[in-house]
Image (cartoon, rainbow, N blue to C red; front, side, top):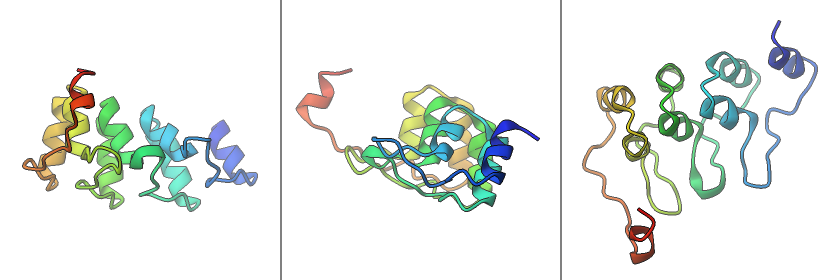
Length: 128
């Protein structure tokens, strides 16, 4: 039994959030720990939970390039066309920003919208 599984089985709160709204599921997906994500979802973690800025676990996994985690979340029913609340990034645009071609291809195979346009402000252009 992994430490994560043990903690969850012992009653750890799978809905606990950091100050930025991240949960254990968010961190598991962002770091490619598909096995931990599976345990957390089995224990009731929210698949479409949005942390600060509206990023979902699928968005975090896609941005980090974790193909297996992305596929797992899609199989669990994660929305491949979800958008952030701040700048309207999509799961696909985040995978593109990370340069993760395999993830981009996987998202497109599962219906991600390649025509979605980001909200752009003069300030966002100065950061790139």
